[in-house]
Image (cartoon, rainbow, N blue to C red; front, side):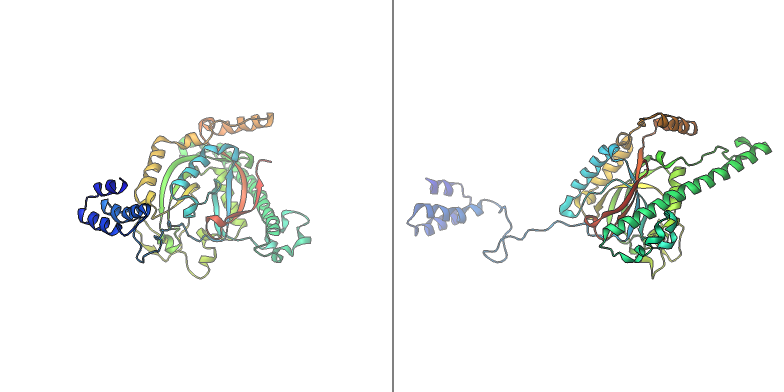
Length: 389
């Protein structure tokens, strides 16, 4: 009955007859049925598995494309408070999984705003004033290798502390300069209406009140050919952040404390070549260009030839997120006030920014130093300090 059923379902009668005659040599009915299955069933339709070029070999399994860009050096990040980024990290995880996940080397990373990329630790003499005991340990500058993360962590924390100290020095200088200008304008009877310039004392606040404010969502293709061949070979989902006075000042301070990064003529990739910049037409220029600080947060580095990128899915999602202003939902719009001092600080901040309580933002929690050598999987934190302690 089984044999008759197989033959009746076969569209090629010649193959069926030939197979039936050949099967008669099997005395065991089970062996005969198995032979008929392997001989007749392929004629009923296309095979579900590709045929192997050599009989008996298993079909070759195609490996997925991987994001293999090799990043460089050390990076200085500003990280938001993890307690406020649950919705943001959910979106980052979703994008990573949709664009290949770990099989495509799409490893997750913490949300952050990059202040410097591809820099290195400065010499000991440049930051030895961080604490009084630093001079006793000056040999630490040259005694640790890249693999010794304990000494690297101690050294990194001191450099980051130097950045914080310098921030408050520059903040005071900034305030005094603003105050002098404000007093001069008041004495001369100038105001915003006659000069066209603001006379407000927009002094950067305490770092404990530093905010990361998303303003838009942006799709950024970054092919390998960009920036004179320094491109990552990916498409990036970016959140553009507001360049607040405190964020701009912190960037300037970090840029002065650390050696030049890749965007400012530093980094190992720039040691023997002059930095070039792609213009909007894709042409390169041999001239060195000033790089404007555009704070942002990358949500995913999607391989440029991944199906989700080639099909336009990632770009369409970013455009939809921008249209819906989804980042407003990802960032809290009301501050958490836990103490009397927080209330005083918040009220003082509202005097300078009346819309502050309505703007979505994340509290900047950590100033951190990361090793960004290798692929995404190789990244690790070197040191970090809590700005809110």
